[in-house]
Image (cartoon, rainbow, N blue to C red; front, side):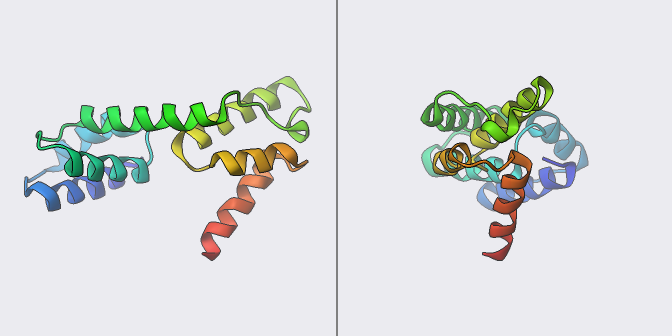
Length: 137
């Protein structure tokens, strides 16, 4: 998440509970939520307000995101690159890290991961294709 996106997230929170934020608040939330995507954070905020009457704090958002990431990763079990990405150790490790992040964040569904695994397309090209499909939708 970028700092400007943290401001967008806080605008969503304000729409739900009418609190006010300033630049320092935005920076503080960004400091804690920076590792996550805006889409994940927005989903977590909506889920929190749908399920809870507690005053929302960053820890609630992080907990929801982490729980959902663990659930997504559990659906895939072991993440390994396909044959096209096993050219050398560095590529294999970098691809495994990128795939894990994509599955955890929801950017890559279990079905898409299986499709990638069955194919011979390197991850960077497969990801580019996914992004192109999303852009066309």
